[in-house]
Image (cartoon, rainbow, N blue to C red; front, side, top):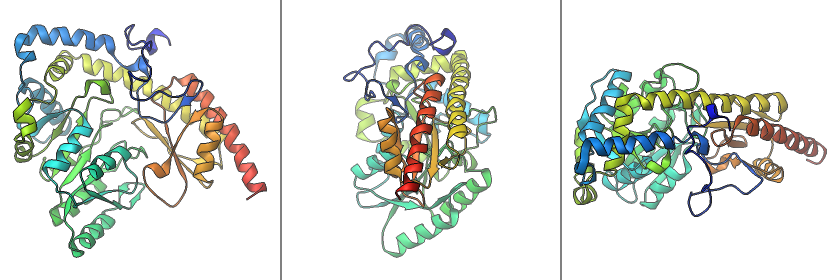
Length: 403
């Protein structure tokens, strides 16, 4: 990896191994499965500077039990960042620090819902998010999507049908920006329609915005559902896992102050304080100094190179076998095909490429496969796409000969 393509000398992968990191692909396999950043893109040197700076500034207070909702300096910085980007007022009272999106979902599933209630989810969506909800006894009910995201008429019908059956709805869980797994972005008109449906029925929307800052084509970040609603009736989940690193376990939710207060008032916070006190102070230094935005610009350019390498190579080798829309941001390429999904994934594995079946994320009218471009350099992605072209074209020929 070139110096330009690495976040710094400390971003080595000498300890990138099972027992240290959560998942490591088999040796010799190009892993296009998990939504991980390539090790060299994780800014170890940047964080190595941020922690001493925060400890020097806050001294012993950095190692105390933090404010239950999170340290005000951090909450004020992220609230101001959101308000400047989207316009509606947003202050520290709208912010609750979490240990990432998974923690936030767990908080919502325990603090705002009861076992047995229904959560309306997208037809395709974050698989582990659904598992978190299921672990708390909540029942996911899928709502159909189209190219613009969740269909508002289908959401309206799902709410009415669920309530007519005497079932309670905890909330609806959506990811309208650089959606995982499809990469789509719901246009503003669609977002307003979804907000209107939810408001008419009094249903809380939970907006998973994990990839919101990873637009790769230079346009303005999409306005969130929460921003459009003025933080009323919407809980927005944000994380630094996708831009700085999941090992920080740092995120935050944005909501009406009453919801923030309700969640922060549980024993989990009153017993132990902030979910991630010292790390939030280190990231506050990055935000205040401008280092975070400099890193974000660099990371976007690196991800753009990786997305384009995979998309161009696939587009020139698999016409008629798979189709896709190049995403404007995020980590993933969503492939649609007329060929059997299991055969596509099995053929990829035989070519030493790990790809995830679309059925892992939901069900739809045609076979699908998700490829992550975040974990490998452009050269590896190009080679992987060429290998997929060879094995999937061969599979296509075989299926025509032996249907």
